[in-house]
Length: 305
Image 1 (cartoon, helix red, strand yellow):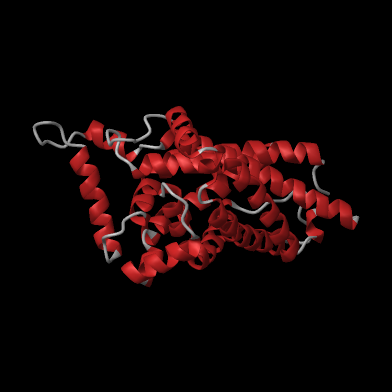
Image 2 (cartoon, one colour):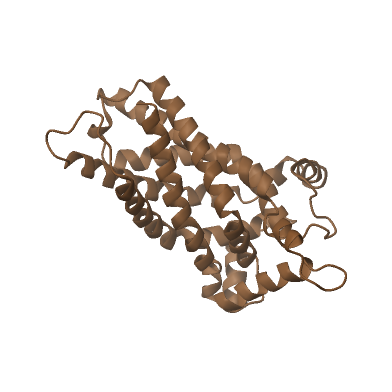
């Protein structure tokens, strides 16, 4: 039997919030590198883009006598951490809560009493709905985070804080400025939906095939959660990564730009490979981060049993 909806939603929210916080603190530097690579319009290869990012960060981290300051380097590589923490904890907490709620709706509508009756299409539908709901609510946070990471601290017009970003966007662009990049974000929900549906499908069959004498509340091992989350994330990322590049560039644009126009411009000026700029840093970040997120998520949920 499934948990009661109220109990389950609370568990999902706490587990998602904790998982998002843990992952963000560990993986933010790789997120910084990935985003800078996505916004790089000059490098023609992944390696050139990586070198360009590190050269830039090192240059702005030097003191007046030209020496590299570790303190400055750390501050720069963690620029945008505040909105990233707020965004990730909020997004993961809301995402898993919405996901649980939409699965409950499917169960209630179908007259079923536990998740074992659900199939891959049910998981996919619930994940899509949860992703769209979360993206609409959290997009303003991601706009501010992207702009903070894409600019250096003392660069003219750079946001000094989250609150400064909120004020500047409203003053210069109005409400619509908070929702730049929302369209590709909504489309990119497909990546999370595919990943989560693959993960839950794996989980469904692995639990189903456990020994017949298992306890009603049996769970998978940490290792099983690790490789299920890794495989599902790599498949989904390979399919949908170009949308992240388009979204990042839309978010830093200061004027309205059509997605098709931007895509054509990227391909014409930088080649098809530009749509996968930063994917090496992204995979290095998202696969371990996803594994960490889902392991923490499952462990926190288990504490509620």
